[in-house]
Image 1: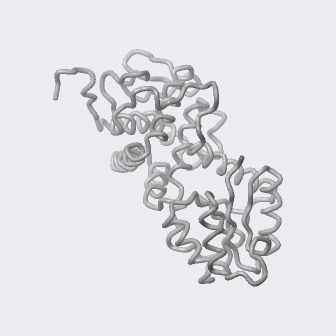
Image 2: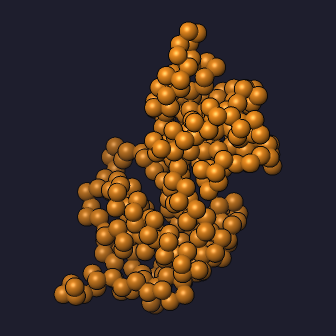
Image 3: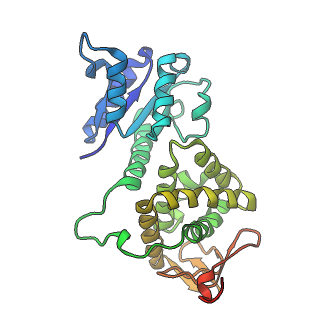
Length: 296
């Protein structure tokens, strides 16, 4: 069963909210909407909190009226404080609330409804992939010994940074067809996991904008390390996805080269263990101690 989605909006956008809810429900999602889920006579604030607590995903419709609404601001704050997946949808040009300024949003002002919904569905799927349980019949990533979070984070940064440097901010929209599929999926999963954490989203955005900046790489690696350390399921899934890149990435000499991208990403051998050194960007070298078990 797909998770429940809470839609926050001002009543000026009721028509848009209902249209969005109907579309999401047709895709199998449970949708909480105050106009249909709060019964007459119920205590409004209590019902809002119940709806938020029961929902895994928080969608907020941004407009001039909603961004000035104290109720909407309260709902945004509650969703952030309770680590909900957050997806803002921009309905008109307005001042985005401070706590959402580094959260990825879908701009419906530039898109037809159907095109916008495709982007919404893509982000929702990334939310699901970051928290979905292992499918029956597939080996669990948890069963394999996890890499050190710092090593795993550095390896992933090394893998994605060259592509980000090449494609820049067009990475998510235009580069998909030119990327090894698993590299694209890894970035989508990380982006989805970062949602709802403004600091992490900001660090990821900085890396997208200037991926060859070693400070941006280090900041991204540090943030990713924290998530990997605190969430072993996320770490195990990312590690499994990294191993799957073996079918798309070829070891050539001392480097790793994408089979359909031709971009070297440093001295990395992807597998159960990490060997050699990781070189991120401009010679920012991270040494793997596993290369020499006696080294402390």
